[in-house]
Image 1 (spheres, rainbow, N blue to C red):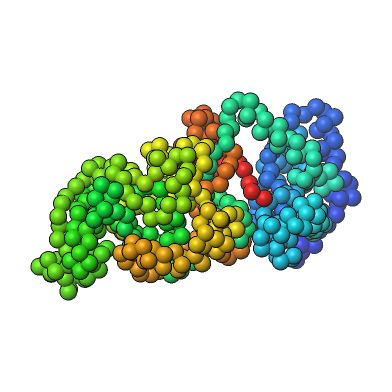
Image 2: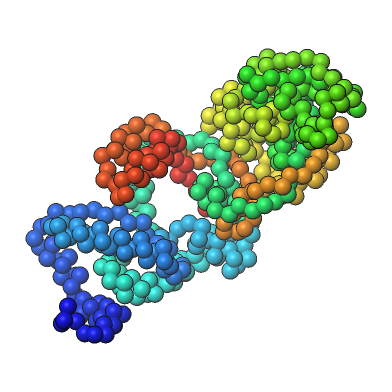
Length: 475
């Protein structure tokens, strides 16, 4: 080590090496020689970054790892085409333009003109390409910026359509609905990963409402919900087959209610206070009149809360009791109200029991901005979160409100707009991942992973439970 200077300036030396590579066109020469020799091609798939922002630590770390992989491939006799790419599509670009132009509603985009909106988006997608090139080159990564590609290039978009056509020809795509986390501010669904990025503690209304049985209007099923705005879209109730249910007489009101035996305390919170509650107090609050299991209740019809969808083609299947194991007795009443357009389990359960049909229409009276449509006249034009108060008042006027409270809980917000998310059914094209899941899992077993525990753990677990992939986007 005696030949090294006592003081070694690493940054300066790195800059000198980068300069030497640039002067001698080292990267281009290596690439040309590999092509002249006919070296075997090594394909490396690299997800391109957005150029609407500057590179950060995450980009730098990932880029360094990618550079190591491709350099190693070349050093072992392969030729690797390393073209820089830019992701020009998606919400990051559109959201920035929406902020700049104060666009809050889809209709504003249509009024402006999609061609003009797209042109404005294109004007910023390559804003920082030179800064990216400078940073990446300074890091010593070898990648071709002169022959870069952009996802807005027609040739690139045509290649994506070609892939989709291959899937279509193999009957691996279909059109249906998927209930997804939905940003009403951005007017688009988000992935489950995105929905988990921004949780906040909020206070929401929590109500218990009643649904009278058609064959005994003096007795009602009762259900608890923290989303009163979904009640106009209710088309079923759900119980657990093996759970114990009871019919009680509420002494104070004189009304008969059916709920889970283990959830009577929902109506009488004093039962949760171990210091104050004594079993002999029960007689002053309620009387148990009958006992059931969940399966005894399945199929029973009830009076809808609202009849906005009584003329639906499938309405004969609406407003009946279903069963599913997702129902628990750890909260609420043990009876869950079903609005399939606004709950993933609701959609699954209603589909399973034939209340709705796969790919068919379903009650969804909320537009992409979270506003009620003409289908619900009393709250038409109101955002769902602003409609709760008015809907609760309507329910109370119908004498269907049993209990009103507030719930403090953690709730997902859009990580871009910082507004509350909802869950909403969106029309979508799907790739039939479930049909080929076993093949995907088998191929993963043949893949070399670093570290290996990812292959056998997290990634394997994700693949074995993978669902059909919704590939549509609304914007």
